[in-house]
Amino acid sequence: MMSPTPRSPRKGAACCLLLVSAVVTAYAAFIGLVSIWVGVSHQRQPGFWVPIVAGAALFVSVAYACLRLFRHVLTHLKPEDVVNL
Image (cartoon, rainbow, N blue to C red; front, side):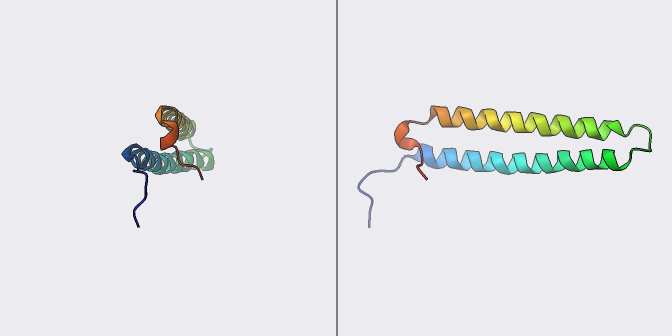
């Protein structure tokens, strides 16, 4: 049965964009946390702080970028494009 109201392609594109960005953020967060774990577990070696700083910088920058993208996409959708869960 066909829906009486047409669906907006913007809603589908926004959902796909947010899903892909969430997957990329989860991957980068995993890499950043593994880098921090490697640095913490090798504290007796010189330069142990480098993976800790790199992992923290990666984690913070990717999380910030993802949150900015989520806010940008959700604020630019029209009220009829937003999915009510």
